[in-house]
Amino acid sequence: MEFELTPPTGLGALAIGMPRKAAEQALASFRDPSAISESDQLDRFVFRPSGLMVSIHCSRGELEAIELGRPAGGQDTVRFRAIDVFGLPAAEVVTLMRGLVTMKEAEDDPASFIAPDLLLSFWRPFEADNEPDKEQGYYFGSVLLARPGYYDTPAEAAARLRAVGHQEP
Image 1 (tube, one colour):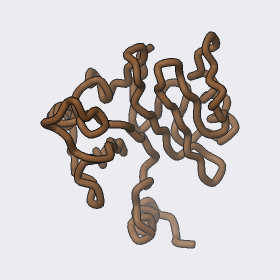
Image 2 (cartoon, one colour):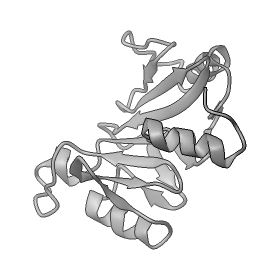
Image 3 (tube, one colour):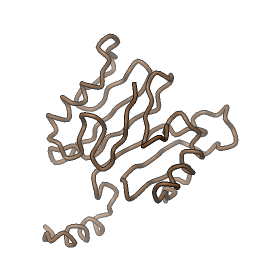
Image 4 (tube, one colour):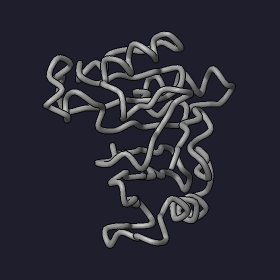
């Protein structure tokens, strides 16, 4: 099955900002009825037969982020535009993404990258760009799509609120 990341909106039936209960119901739509995983926790994550994990992160009663974990098999594909974020080597994903948007190394993890304008974050445990046999470092292991401000520090969050005309609490 094909899954398309559509920042800042979401992924399929999962829409950033939707109420928690609606997000939990939408998460259930990612299950394959013919092969439901006993590991599924519909208030947090589901696993597809390919091993693709779809996880929701809610706060203050609404969906703030969606995370996908790399599938083990090729039955499921996750794309941003035409870029296969798990099927291509991480270095190639970064190069292709940089042709479309700003991509920055994560400050605390140089093997991982953030597209801050899209609120997409790409993670892998270590960099193995020249070692295809080390899949965990050669490919991204997860991608996270989040609401605006998800990565903000408290000071950045306060500045964001001031910029849109809200007062600090």
